[in-house]
Image 1: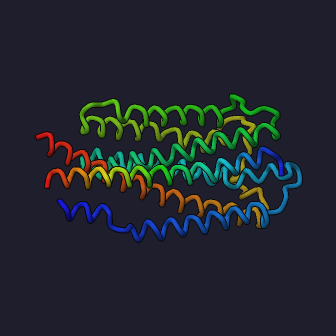
Image 2: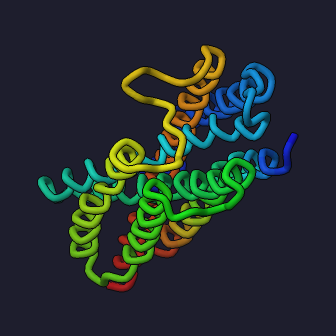
Length: 233
Length: 42
């Protein structure tokens, strides 16, 4: 038992490296957004929201994809590890999608004159956000851990449909949301593109750091729960 | 710099940092509770 405590307390070397890399790349991306990327001709400085907004959306979508894949893993293997990954990734993904929606609204006000409009991309984003908030709330409401994990796995697989729907919304339907990536390439300058890729890399590292942290927390909580059960029995 | 950009980047910095700090503090607290239980169980 003492060994378990030592194992849980052991310094997380990879986690520390990830955290340092995340911080450095995040600050680097921040510098690029404000000092390296040119001022956009039409929108001016407000366009700078775009870099981290897109990166945040990417990480949110990726987080939900991991929840989807880990859900399939849990249903096929019934291993608690898959459930922990799915739950942790949904939590991190939800935080990033919340940032995406909030900062999208901040960009929309000067660009469209309103914070919110019920056009296809925004409507799907609102539905997606509500679905994953419900996922987070429902996780603790099922009494049996096995039933909760199975239910969450199915929910995470079904809710993932909002990710491709959100991606294709601006391609399938008439929408006022800007389309940066199209079949004709990317509608931004090379410096803007470099800044966007730096932001994507930084946010992916931040996601990996936070996911690892949440997984370690879930493992520690499991250990605590089993100790409590041992003590009660 | 427009206020919208300042608020947006404040959100971009605060949310991941806040989530990281909250998770680390909670993790530390759980580890402390584990140690207490282990000591009680001998």
